[in-house]
Image 1 (cartoon, rainbow, N blue to C red):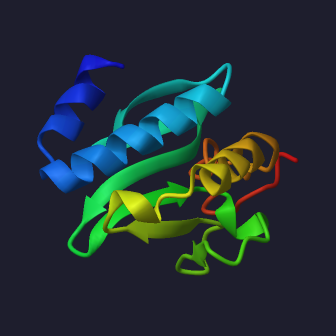
Image 2: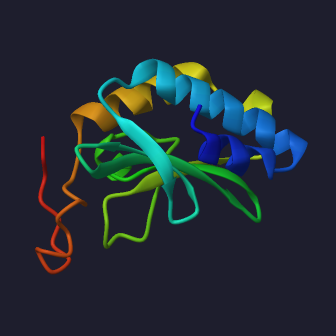
Length: 130
């Protein structure tokens, strides 16, 4: 695990550290050819510079977010603002994390992507990469 991600997780409350470790392990085990780093203050995974999945601590829990998750057709994922194609789920305890679901979503994040990498160049317009 990258030191910066280890540091991020270590600053979380113990309950959220457990959730973050489980999410990190599941994401890492199911993504290949990706890079991860702290981006906008939380762990994010990228494919060729395009963000696909990350997690962050909110007031009400630990959110797992998929940048293209609105296209996954998954009921458990809450679709974001509508302007973008993100969707997420928020966890408050480790027993809520279903690793089979997370694995399926991570696999979809690899295959279903919107081009966030070039969103500024396209003046806010998202283009599909799938």
